Length: 367
Ligand SMILES: Cc1ncc(COP(=O)(O)O)c(C=O)c1O
Image (cartoon, rainbow, N blue to C red; front, top):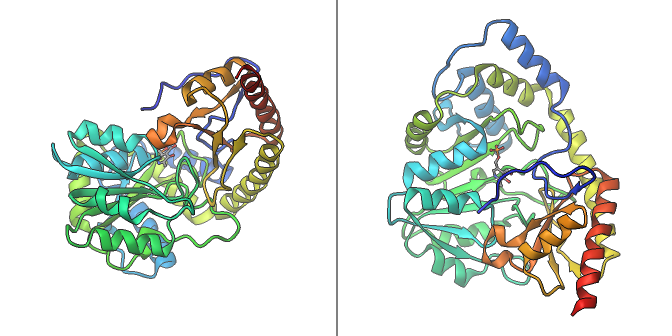
């Protein structure tokens, strides 16, 4: 369960942030102003503005080379509302939903809200999905939720991981929801397989996407779901009940994001790639913190050597002037870890890890 959002005390460095440190590119902001000036101040279609749905469908079709129509697209109030719309739309009380442990905490919260039960699967030492735990978790699952690149680990699903998922869910025909909020942040040329590219999931796979991370638009609240039209229609009933149509001018700005802000997204990706190296270097100078280099997103999921639990260690880090996320927030398997974000400025990454190491050093001396 996530805690409330607090503003950090003055002088505190945040390595806890889950959002880009960049402001939204000007071309997108200008499009919003233009839309407002030309009267985009009214309600619009509950599925989203048709020109935005067309832009999304053609953008995804181009990169996926499969048939996608506007009926497969629902514009949502960010990924958060998209996730809620799918989960509340398809999970009935008593249904089982399988998620990875650790993973983004919103999924379990939403499943509890829908009256469902969570089962979990893990990865093995090599970072691949563990076949036995996956088979156990999905045995009676109505829905399987994956997050890739993962928040908090940065791991992505290889085509063999996807193969396992397809095979393990074949008999039940479980629905699969893939949250790809960080899909634009993939490093080292790692191959990324979107759910839209997985054979066998055309009729039961749903993509949840957002403009928040790729285009630094967290405060705008716009994202989308893409999947078979019957599932999209079910999700749209929940979305229009809880949220109503998405801000009209924001949707015009989202069209501009897709058509004109790709160079900005590439520039931000290059910057994150550099910051990932900075964090890797900073971590390598600290004993007692170790992490697999993330393939994507902007987090290191660090295992630490310290006697405290992750909440206790995070509190101690806050007292030392650096905010981090306790691993327990992402599930039981996150215990013994903290999540560090490299969406922070490079100098903050160095200083934040220095402060963190001073806390670890002190606790080591105490033991
Ligand atoms: C994996 C993941 N999915 C979804 C979201 C929510 O994104 P949005 O801002 O579009 O609601 C976040 C935000 O941190 C996230 O980390």
